[in-house]
Length: 328
Length: 312
Image (tube, rainbow over all chains, first blue to last red; front, top):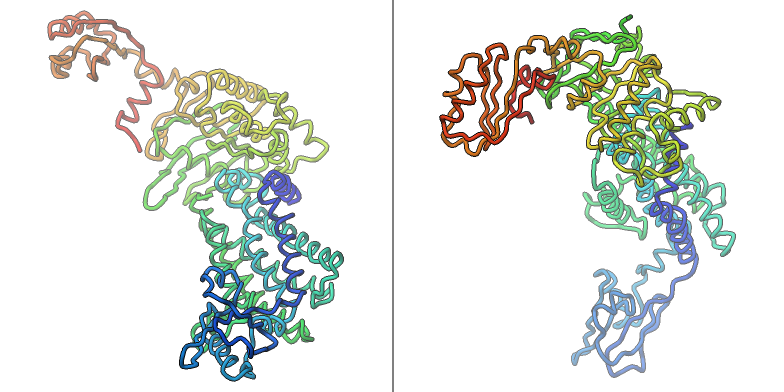
């Protein structure tokens, strides 16, 4: 077991791309996530295309600025303007925006009535409502899941090199090998992430939204899940593992509200979203940040634990089948 | 010599293909047994079963007194596997490779360094122990592949085509290493496609076909039934007018193969029919360029027993 672990660490030291990603890029992204999540966002700008610029509306969420010509769509995509509003000859306002219909309607209301609808929440307001800690861990969740699979790369590599067969013919067996891989992935995921967060807190005085102890536990939960997922996906897929993982992770993280809360009237979509493990994790993270206790989230914790166990069970079953067929 | 490997009625089926079919053989302690067989004969399946990485469907395998079904762990400790693939890590040093694989067999730290050193020396890689295999030639990688299998000093070494695609010097070194291992008391099972390797090192040969042993014995014993057989190869200017049916009428001729400008005739050497063969060739428009003769070899036996039909 110790030899298998040592072998993993010796080999990972030679994989510079993964090493740079794990030890530099990941912590850097985490620090940036913390840095930006901890700072208030700059108010978004609305460009007003018209001649009567004396009584432009004012609000907490947007700054209205007069502009002389219609900006390019790319400038709006870059975030230079949240929307552009123009007025026609019949005093009717037209809103051009890449934001949602709800946002578009609220901006139109701002211009016609002079204030935003009372129940309207812009992106910045939504972020504040989620809490800094939830925003940070939401972003980190995606990174941890993707990085977990990258750190498990030596397992499919051992299959391809046929070194796994050699290991299986020794006194070590496939299950002790898998256990060593799980320990390795977990350690390599958890430690750099935790250290990066603590360093960001110490160096920049960033507000995390949790105590160090709470953060350690929350990080532990998502790392344990990410490790189980990494082993599972690396077992069931033979190739394009990183590509598939990145795609699946990004989509499920967006749907889970890791970056911004998602709500829809579509029952099917919301049922799918609520079943996603990242969504369940975000519920725990958000609840704990706003004073909840872990015991309040027993069902959610059990769900994540059960899902992780299911991943391990499928992994063992697939490995047993492939081993009996001589695939390894 | 006591029997150290006993295989009885072994069977293994993959996707309705009977890879190993009632295979039975024994290997005595200290023996080098060569396993020959065309592609799909069941060599690798047999080796993977003996290496404990593949479960047989039925049959009994006893290795070093341990039953494969019941005492797998005890068997693992006494065997070393040299796989057909280069199962080594290119990015860590040769020494770390050998150390890692030896450590998996429970070699104590106190003995590990010495045993790794011995293994690297025996394959001629000690001076390059700190180098990474990605800087090695194909032959060096093959030798490292062997070192990784012998560092824990197993009693039984199972080699699956260990010399594929290497230069003659490396091949020669590997064969010398195998003989040296035998002299130290190791029992070796050696699977290969190269007849001359088996002729050079094996005490006994098993010829496998369709998952079963179709012949076994020493090279001399296997060639015994073919001692009166001789193969003549004629290089001619053209074979346009030559037909197999003409040559087959000569008494003693067993087999004829006409390909491009070469005519190969397998015949009974006691019949002294060479003059007759040559005169028929000439009378049928074949002008002789050169000729050679070859007595029955292991290859002759192998091709006769397994057939010349191409295998997938």
